[in-house]
Image 1 (tube, protein in one colour):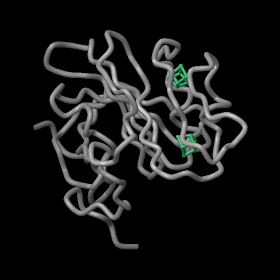
Image 2 (image 1 turned 180 degrees about the vertical axis):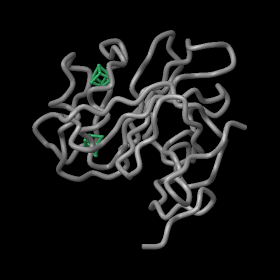
Image 3 (image 1 turned 120 degrees about the vertical axis):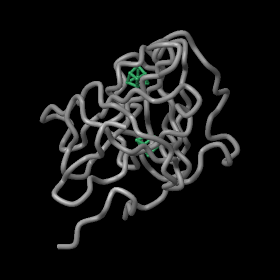
Length: 177
Ligand code: SF4
Ligand code: SF4
């Protein structure tokens, strides 16, 4: 099977979140890790609501409604990230350092990066943004093969960082920039 190079992702581009009204509902920076939900379609779906142990995500009985996040309740635990079939949830922590934010991104393709790797971060349209160091990978069996990749992303690009590009030939990630 043909490999996808680091500069040619075959991943389906997601909608650019900044351009979709109502997606970042009342989005604002917080002083702690917080989920960011960019669920753009009104489809019957609510595992994110069921997965949140803090009741921070509300969809309600009409499950085709888009989820509403209560940021006062959200702890940034990230348990909602791997359950979303649309890969539509991230957690952003802007307190990591003055230069970098921590962005937890779902990743369901193989290979899975490991701590210390450098990967290429993409925006919602599949445009390459920057290299990012992998701080951690959370991939227990309950995630059902959707890894949560914890990245150090420049603060200015944290909102746009939506996915990571597939590894290049031989499953190698990019070299340290
Ligand atoms: S990050 Fe944790 S607390 Fe926040 S919405 Fe997701 S599951 Fe709930
Ligand atoms: S699980 Fe994902 S796709 Fe489904 S409602 Fe929640 S955010 Fe939207």
